[in-house]
Image 1 (tube, rainbow, N blue to C red):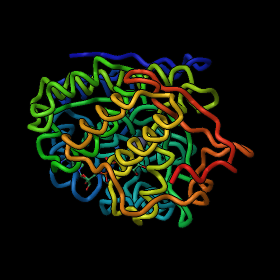
Image 2: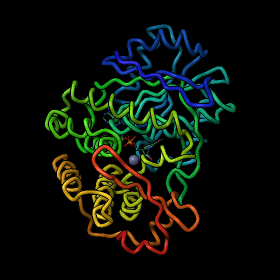
Image 3: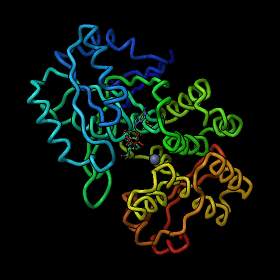
Image 4: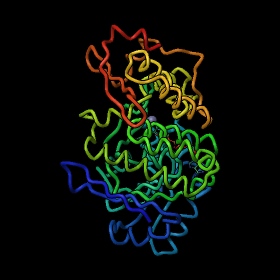
Length: 355
Ligand SMILES: NC(=O)c1ccc[n+]([C@@H]2O[C@H](COP(=O)([O-])OP(=O)(O)OC[C@H]3O[C@@H](n4cnc5c(N)ncnc54)[C@H](O)[C@@H]3O)[C@@H](O)[C@H]2O)c1
Ligand SMILES: [Zn+2]
């Protein structure tokens, strides 16, 4: 078992551990009894993960003399709304959950964001742990404590920062994950390689087939590496107050626009793949980056099954509506070379070239 400790700077009381292990469910009862001792656990899943893993987890906990009950919502991004939080809170009250309960969040990034938010506000805050079941949730959304829901006018506009008490990562959950969701998560992992870790990037180049075939040891390697990179960044910059966390937005400023333009039919990882290729083209034009590095990234994304071009091009006005704008400038993250990224402030009057 690998254990990664997370310590948020300035808030030592918020430290917790990420456990990475096959069948790590087995160590859950002991962990809960020793560290949370809630009177009852609500297990949050979406409608799909409920059937595959939720019911079994409740049975398993009950067998281990832990009181647990499922609460769930319809799978998909469309559920990430305040109305879902309200419904789930009502359901918890009906099921006699009180302020001494805790939440176990079992699912992908949608479940994670909803669950973390629900834990922030139910009875003014209860403890929660994360058990991510998609590749994207394992390497990205379960780490960092960002929680929240969408508004009609945009994604993730209501939320909190709320760190879990622990994260349990069991790679076996990926066995049932559809291939396009593996590729979706892989896009973020390639991003980590480009912004911070050339060795990780090279590993993916070399072991791509194994990764796409869900080879456990290859997945374990890239998941651990990615988690370590994100943990290091959020420990220093939980709230995106300095430049560290901004680096994670590489490929995202343009990617978000494409995602929105597709009315969210394009998966997030697919959109940021195109975003990475587009921003690299500009980096080459600006002489921040060598053409051969841009080509190498594009080749890997394509081989991974990710799109690298888009019929539609982002408009300057769409880029400006992105949350990352500050005053008359917008922050863009450029790769200087594979393994190193920089932040560059662009005047909003110069945005035409980002099309
Ligand atoms: N909080 C953060 O820092 C952060 C970071 C990145 C993304 N996000 C959010 O994450 C969300 C996307 O997460 P996602 O891609 O995991 O989507 P998701 O949670 O909707 O999961 C994708 C699909 O896979 C299914 N699924 C989950 N686990 C499965 C398994 N093991 N086997 C089979 N099917 C399974 C789900 O039911 C769903 O249909 C977005 O809402 C995004 O905003 C948050
Ligand atoms: Zn992302």
